[in-house]
Length: 293
Image (cartoon, rainbow, N blue to C red):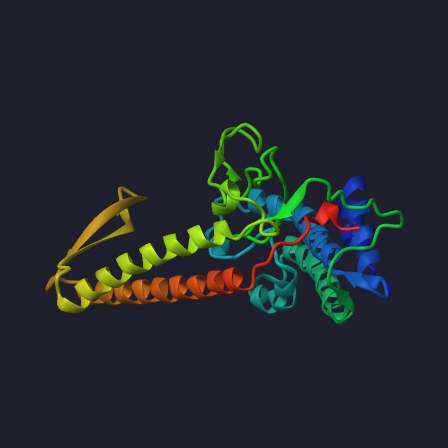
């Protein structure tokens, strides 16, 4: 399937044109791998935006102070699936030269969207297989008893630090590590299910607290609830903790929300306890992945 977009091609720079051609090639392939499919959609959207941006900028500069167009919704950031509806949306202004130029490029955006839709039937999970794949190094690895992911092991055969995210500290690698998987302190599941036993104990403790709180809600012992909400102050929105008291306006909605949340938490904890019990019951010692011949 050939996708002709001469106007977009002419409006974008050479590197962007290269990515656009890559995206078209991906969509035209007999098999479209999911990872590449996602990249292709991003490249198409970026190309469309780059082609529309100078037109939109020129339009607003030439119509500065023109109140006849103040309500027109004209943007360079257009999703591909919105292209088809834009001619109708801009019909009132279709005689303006910039709008005609804008809609001509949008029409090519519609063609790109049709190509995306046609490719969906050929999308395959994953990414293009490597011609010379590098074998995965399983040396000194084990399966975390909690998150079930394979990780490297410490000198004591415990799981290395994992399950964290990097805080925002000026860049991906300048922040601190926040959080850790519960299984970090334990041996891998191949060697022990102590992590599951400890995790189930913690879940049971949390369940007891949640059920006690649920009982207080049912008995009417909870008369004040707090929520973090957005409050408008001098044209700006700020986050504030707001108290809702029994009998006051808004209490019924907040109370119902609190009951739903605690019900969901209890279901989640019970499900987790059942899962950990299953892991404990079926556990038996087995070789580490790197030791399997």
